[in-house]
Image (tube, rainbow, N blue to C red; front, top):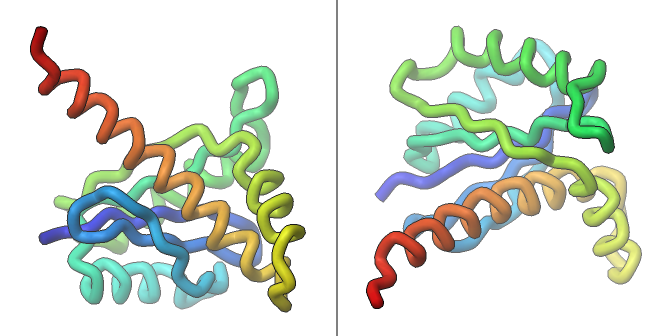
Length: 145
């Protein structure tokens, strides 16, 4: 079964999460550096986890508009499309508040390297949001009166 990859695109690091084979839960993976090997690393993830779809957080402003970071993310995705198999679907998900939610979650733990873990935890929230929407829409579609 294929899986879904979740990415939180940052200038220095990219948070990474992957779904289980059934598309129910998101699990964090180690972040990857946003450097000259970033597309190679994403391709490795696609191959190793049999990824069929990538969900990427789009950082909209509080007003729901695209700011500088959203434009950077879209530019990154355009470059990414040139480096991954063409059959991989890419979906944007509104990621407002995922970083602050990740920070609050990590503040409640005693883990070290919290800054580095925020990126992948944000990717988990992004991917889980998408998975929950999929599950809800499937349940709504399959529900009969």
